[in-house]
Structure formats: structure tokens, C-alpha cells
Length: 112
Length: 113
Image (cartoon, rainbow over all chains, first blue to last red; front, side):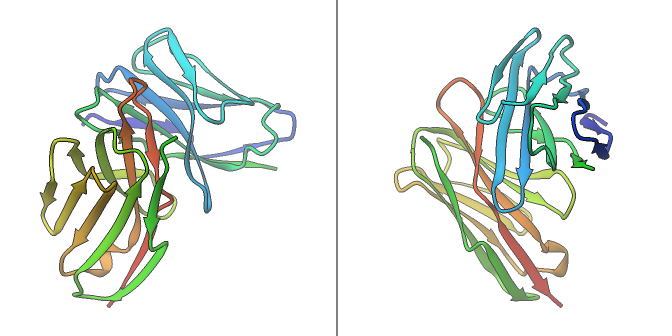
């Protein structure tokens, strides 16, 4: 079945450590997105990519980095510069404006 | 700047009731509007997608309407069941070419047996 796979489901980060969240899709979608979800704040866009080897900052990109070397993959790195990284991270993709988004199952990141 | 608001933030109803969730948006220049369901600790599941040229979409017991001119959408759930308990999110896809969805903060629904 086609879909989006996020891994790991749970991730723990120590202070000062960089961590990378994986997002893989087999839907042949061109566009991919990373959102952060915090209680009471809804979903906020971190980065998005509309095509391989190109990506754009979203509303809250500071402290995060991404790459898009393959159409299927859009990993998100949470760097030590992100001061409040504890959140639920969601990856999504779409094929165009007429078809809507598909989301992965999310990664919960906790700072320990 | 597009803003999306969902009212109420939480709703509790007895099983079998018909209910309406509301979503409003400030900029009527949208490509489409999408309703999602989120269970605790899970990702988002798409329920209905309404294109800007459409007035409503139906899937089973769910019906979503769109009134672009007034900046409103409603999600109607008929004959609610305990399994409908979840958070429902509304998101609009703006008319810029970035593809970004702008989300409301959601309505958390509890259907009591």
C-alpha cells in the first residue's frame, strides 16, 4: 500500500545533540512538508519541498535543517540551535493542489 | 495572512446525536479546504477535500460544506458513534503556489455511549 513512513515513532534527544527524523513516501508525490504540532497551537510549517534538490523555509524553520536528495525522502534534522524541540513532528506529501495532503503517523521528540 | 479558526475547541455529545463542527478562514482566495481526523498520538487522516469550486462533499456519515464568500466551512457528522471521538482539524490551501496548508487548532470531540 502507498503511504508515508515516519521513523522512529519516539525519539529522545539530549541537550546539545542533533537528531534526524526520517520521512519516506512511495506515493510518487512531488511535494513534501514538515509540520510541528504543540498542544494548543495547532500545526506549524517548518520546511517544505516542491521538487527534488529544492526546499523552502516555512514559518518556524530556525533550528531545523532538511535535505531532498531523492523524491521519496525528506529527512528533518533538529539541531542543537532549536531551543524547544519537544513536540510531535508530522511529515506530509501531496501531488498537486487538487488532491490534498497525505500525512505520516508522526514522530514524538522529547528532550531529556 | 490567512488565519483559520475552529469553534468549538471541545464538544461532548451523547451517542446518536447529529453534530456540526465549524471552521472559518480570513482569506477567501483558496484552492481547497481539507478536513482531517486525528486520534491521540497519531498522525492525521484525511476525511474530506473540498475544491474551491465545490459547495460540499460527502463520505458516509460525514458531509462537509464550503462557503468561500463568507469564509466558512462546516463538517456535519450524522448519528455520532463513540468511535467518532477524536480531534477534527480543518485546513485551507491558499492560492499562492507554495502548497502550504494553514490549519485551525482543531475541535476535540467526545461521543459518550
